[in-house]
Amino acid sequence: MGYVQEARQNHVKKKVEEALRSKMKQKALKECDQYTSKYAQCAAGNTISIVWQCRKQAKELNDCLRQYTNDAVLEEMKTEYMLQENEKGSARV
Image (tube, rainbow, N blue to C red; front, top):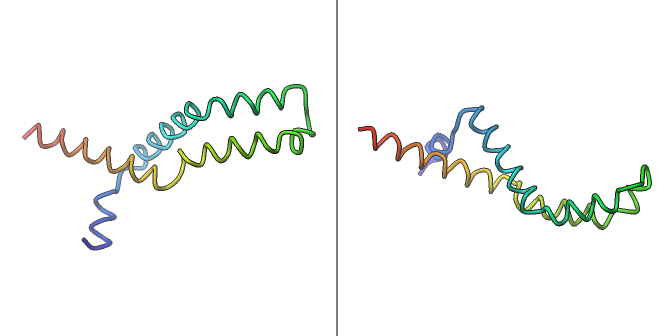
């Protein structure tokens, strides 16, 4: 399959992509809830010192979030969306 065909196959409208990104972020926050809680506990009562006092918790949180919010995950979600749309379209015919 050529590059242009592949690009067309995974192309979704901007609004759909924004909705998929939002869904991806929500899932990431849900999956990384324990790290979010650890970071929030560390940050409670601190101001500027959060930067160095909570460095470990911030890194753990970011590492977790990165697993669920990257281009590969977004492309997979786009592909699933397109498959669902194609199934809906073929069901109408």
